[in-house]
Length: 304
Image (cartoon, rainbow, N blue to C red; front, top):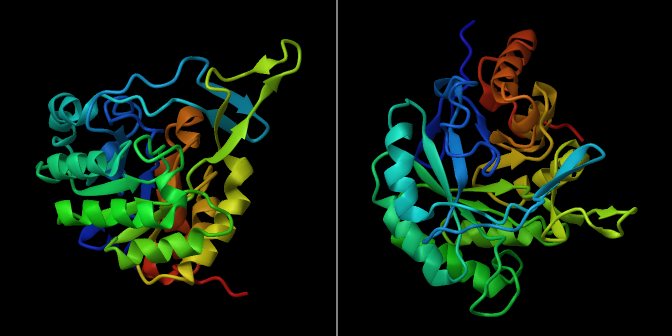
């Protein structure tokens, strides 16, 4: 039996449902000698802002039990830097490129969406709404309904390319914001982002991160992510990209059963770069073992 692993996110078609989480795979060249990029469903690159950003002071990462706390600070070369330095390389591959975008103001988001949306080789945009809104106070776009809607609607008005909204990991209101994203024209939502966390060195009594706090990712957050994906899948009709602690095919399949259409491998890329391709193979083996012709038959297959 021929297996169909393809999925659709709006007008974005992926040959399989496995991509990589933004911030964990660089811009592509960093992993090209380790992973056959053409075998991925898509590549999601590190977050891009209108202008270059240096990021946070080191140390930027710290390992904790079953996870990693990072405070990179969204370091990136800016929109023009990405277009000139990395996009020519990515255009050589037969795999959709999704560019994660962010900004400090609504105008930043709209500008970078307009610039990148005009580029050949950019298949879709992932709007990261978990960034500080400097101009309008120190709250997050992702947790303020009016600001959230303004950003998502603004980006939608600037590009016709598929728009994925990356939700903030709000344990209590994530469904509400997923609905807002759908109402504002999102083609899909992705979740969950890393969870705010910190670690203290008990000997020095100082923070282990230069930024003091960061985001927790890895296996420690997987059960939380599964629950949030299940909740959001019941609230919206648009597709979900699920991420959070995927280290093996079973983790990804759990997300699909909970209602996700696609999955993204994140922290595992740092320790075992082949994880995403092993997840693809594992999903195919699962479909064959259970007599399923299409990966889409798994989506929402959870039986409470």
